[in-house]
Length: 327
Image (cartoon, rainbow, N blue to C red; front, side, top):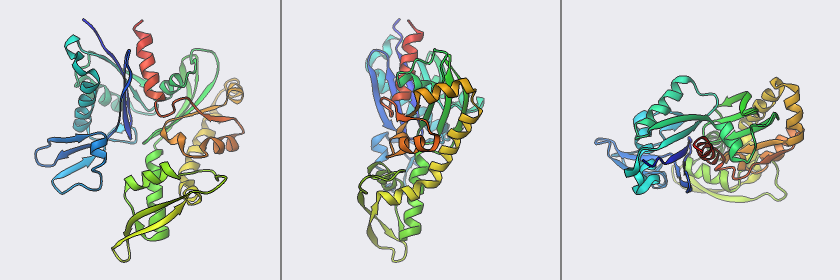
């Protein structure tokens, strides 16, 4: 019997699947579209995401994971099964896979059990759970087995995990249910408050990814934004600058910085000394917002940098772990 090992980053914003010997084979949004009456799946991933905010009454488009945990168990299980079957292609005949699924460091045992059960229902032979900071560190090419302190800040779609790792385990950590989705929401609120313009989440995400900043740029950049004028009810367009996103993001960013400070304050001094020498590693999609590394460095006095393949670090770490565990 041939067992295929699979690592999964079951993220609030995206699901990534790593297959042993093949690398990352799936990187799709965690979005599902289905008919309301029949519950028949219409689309999963990118196709479903394109429907968000544009669907008719008979179709529902949802994100079945919120703040790093499963909010709709049945839909999550069906989404996972579809992605795993796609990843395995025709190799299902050779046996059931062993799967490693990554979860935020702060999830409860009940939430972990929900993930494990959902993975088993896809046909897995064995399911392991790995905490995202550990996976992100491995995926960032950090040797976590050493007696040396490493700080990882993993900012995903639904949660931000801040952890200090040494000797292969988490020494201190804090998982904050504030992350990329909250940056999107902050943009929506800012534009509504400032311009009386209503925009959807997909538009807010484009703003975040295109001009979003938490630190002043050398030259501000602009972007045209279209939405509905809340006064007239008609379509309208405005120009938003990167400087405005700094203001819009300020509250969310402050909470992430506070969490980093808190974890540093409770960490053993020897490990903090290691971190001061090595620097703070940022990973996850949220770490790619312009200037976050500079802001963390300015706030803590410790060098901060975005780790290798920040968007994929968690799933690469999960994939490396299953490869290692089955040698």
